Image 1: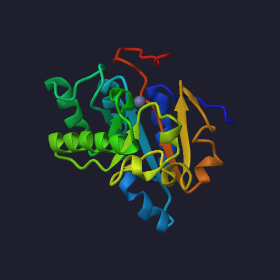
Image 2 (image 1 turned 120 degrees about the vertical axis):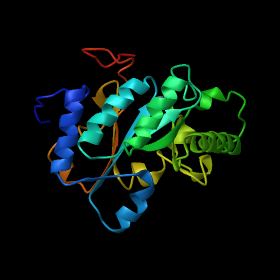
Image 3 (image 1 turned 90 degrees about the horizontal axis):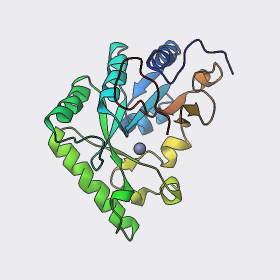
Image 4 (image 1 turned 30 degrees about the vertical axis):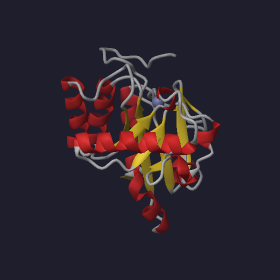
Length: 222
Ligand SMILES: [Zn+2]
């Protein structure tokens, strides 16, 4: 692995990672565009951020990306104790993400539905939350990411989210080279190693785990 000047899991390192990807000629696409871009054999990246903890931290990443003229997808939880999309403050933050040109997706937490019995129950709950998000912010929600996925979710079956797609479907994890971080470590090698940057299509899952925004912010350990 190459020696890195920056810590990729801090904001300056994140910016450096994006700059390297831009230099390598990637187009930052929405999940909806992926299938078409694969058919055209285009060089692209799907940048995914699941907002588990802090919308403030999401805004910082969004601003870094926006200044570099790229777009990513922010997956928002509806049922969480960490923020409230309907509160005046958080509502404005999400509108800010949209106004910067970023895409919204639903981050869906199955554990909020302790009584679900079938795949159809989960799919219906997912779609219900998508419709709420879509109507409230008047923006299309075409992609879902499951929070803390179990084996069923990781199996990637379309029935879990149809008619919308979700991020663990083989289209995003097998047909496109998939990188994800866990507790500030990349699971399958760093996405900015020089050999990786020659791969045509990448899906980068960069978890926002900085917690509440503070000066001299450090990634949250959990
Ligand atoms: Zn999550």
